[in-house]
Image (cartoon, rainbow, N blue to C red):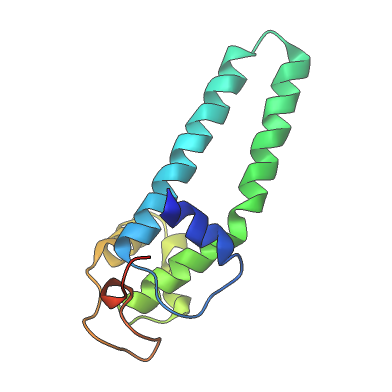
Length: 125
């Protein structure tokens, strides 16, 4: 849970590095929250007011985590030694998604790179 909160604290930080666990736990929590909203929307199908409420809240949440999601993705790419521009490879249909997934699951560069120190070497608080 602290990974999720750490990413939210670094709301618009696009510099530095993010570990695999930080990136994937943030992604997992966002996926779970999206499933909860989707379930709520599906459960309220016959109640128009609640349907609209959960839909609006879901869109607001998605908008609120857009910049932290982009930030942690760019920092994750920095962790493997790639620039933030590699994020756009995901916009290439099918092949780009696969390539981006491979980049996101690649292990961190050991030691320090041009984007900073390895986040896995830092002590946990």
